[in-house]
Length: 336
Image (cartoon, rainbow, N blue to C red; front, side, top):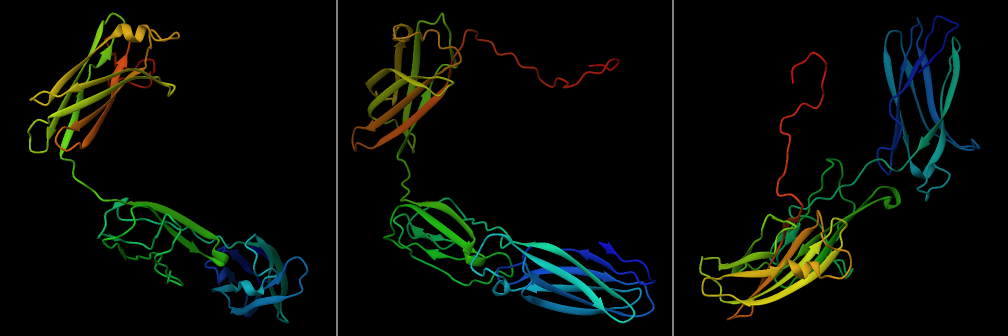
């Protein structure tokens, strides 16, 4: 805000917006007010930086006593020295009055930027199946464009598009890309997956001990496999046992292949001695976890379902102490 004194006229200049509104029009809005008996004609324009060889975007208005006016400067990229550049550019913003009863001249160097907003893409779900509809334009992962929309109206700030996926759509990861602004300076992409969803015919459940102590001699893991309608699965279970360290290291130490009985339940025993005999200084793997992976293969069809569990922890104590609803701060004289 600049205040001019020396006469009974006071002109206030307030810069309200700096930046661009769209790729084709960048606006600067200024407010002018006067405190004088005579009106003042205020001129506002831009000049190229730093040479001042071109004057453009000229506007003017009359400011009367006790009132305010807003003057808006609209910037067209073609008036700038480097039309194709997307880098930051500067211009001089000049405000002046040549009236006989009062003259003033004020200017400022203004930064112009084409980064006038942000682009976000949202799909209604992350996974689609053939014959469904994706509510945005897309092209598949081979790079072949299957749909494209140009020069869309952005006045509402939201654009919604729908693409119907046919019966013979390519499965895999698809990409949606949106470009916006001068020279497509804003570029945003998001991926979604197209795949055929098949409801699993049976499920696999693992039951593992909550913890493993140094004094334990064996581990027992129970595998339960049932069809969706409740009947037990007849087949083979392949179980992989590993130690998952808290540093991310995975050490495999056991594999078992067991035939499921008529109940669809089987128990996998493993001796702790197997872990103790592993090469290296592994015993006792405190705070590490037992990683159990089980593949159940249905005997009749060969269909496979997999279950993974890493809830069992190696610990030296079976007890876990927690402080519940404990005060975070203590002040002398206050009751806990």
